[in-house]
Length: 262
Ligand code: 0L1
Ligand code: MG
Image 1 (cartoon, rainbow, N blue to C red):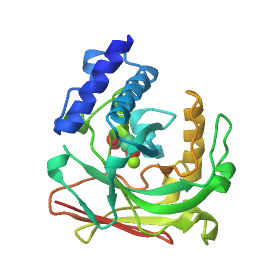
Image 2: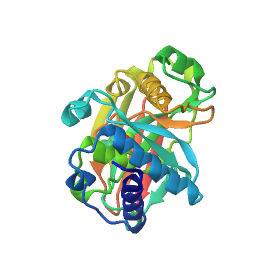
Image 3: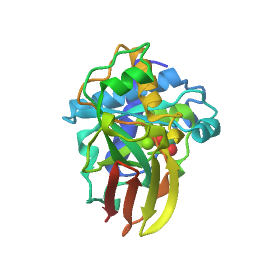
Image 4: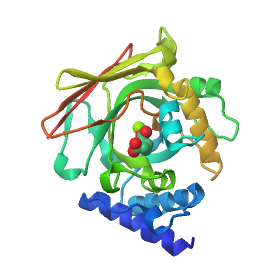
C-alpha cells in the first residue's frame, strides 16, 4: 500500500472519532491489509493528532489476555497511544454525545520513573523502572461499524483508544504486599458486579505487557519514557456503557477508580 493511502485511512478514522460516527472497516476496501501496514496507518493517525495540538501521555497495550488473543487468532498484543484529551479525572464524567458505542474495562496503569528501551527489555527491568502503579478504567470506542473489526483494522484505529480514568491513588510499586498478578479487580456498573479478574489476566503479569510493549516499540526506534502513563491491558472484559451509568473499578491494594456517563 502507498503512503497517500495510509494518510487517507488515518484521516477517515480521525474524522470518524471527531464526528462520532461509525465507518466501514478498512479491510472491506483492502482485504489483504497487513498488521505492518496497519501500524503505518496508525502512525499517520498519531501525526494528525499531534499536529493538531494533542499531546501523547503514554502508549497502551490491547488484546493482552489469552482469551482476546485466541479470539483474534494472534500471538502478540497490539499497542496504541493515549492523548491528553482522552484523560478524565477519577469521579468525573464522560459524555455519550462525544462517543460512538463506548465500552469500559478495568486495567492497571504503570507510571515509569526511568526510560525503557527495547529490544530485550525484561519484566524485571520493567519493575525496577516503574515508579507507581494505579487503578484505571479504559473506555474503548471502536470507530468501526458495530464495534467489529479484524486485527489490522483495530491496529489502524489506535487500538480503539477513547477515554482513560486513572485513580487518585498512585501506589509506589515496591510497597505492594503481593505481586501484581495476584491483585484482584472488580468492575461495578450502577452497583452491580459486571466483571472481575486478577492481574494475571494481563499477559500472565502486567509487567510482561510493558516489557512486550517496549520491545515492540523498539522495532520503530521508539522507547518508553520516564513519566509515561501506560495502560497494560484489560483485566476484565469490556462492558457496554449507557447514559446514566455509574462505573466503579476496585483493585486490591491499589484502590478505586470511578466515572459517570452523562
Ligand atoms: O484496550 C484494549 O484492550 C482494546 C484493544 C482493541 C480491541 C477492542 O477494541 O476490543
Ligand atoms: Mg484496554
